[in-house]
Length: 206
Image (tube, helix red, strand yellow):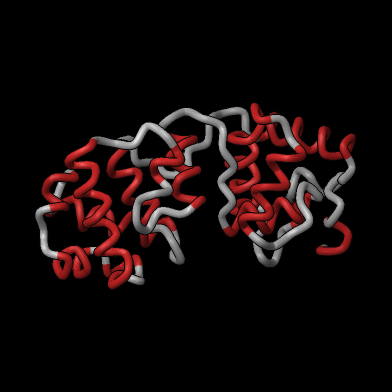
């Protein structure tokens, strides 16, 4: 890890992405959480499509909790893995209907179907806390930038936490994710990327 180069990259990211980046457009905390759960192993577009279908019939935690798993499964089918996601969504909704929305990332991780990425997304976008959101785009791009040395999500998040100040975690999570979506695709568009002159992988990938 080259601390000087990484510092320059972070500043360039801040200049290019000056506005707050949200993981999803959804503003309602409960719906945001469920939509992130739906986004596992699918695209944001498919997750949002499934969420719209679900909430058009069952608009809140109480109604989702009181519905049949089979009906949830049918409604969220566009997001894939509906047989796994449906019972988890029902269980999480039942918990929230009784106890309210979790106010701590650790409490979220105790709920079925919620892993580190989902908990981190909720912590950053809903709770306003600093956390590292290590999704597919982030892990790929962070490694290419030289921020991390791994393709593993858990290890990638751990390395970011160890190598960068906590105040940078949320920004880096979203800016690196956005960079991965805009330029650093699986087949990267290095020639168009604003970091091509300093990115340690640009010459290798071009």
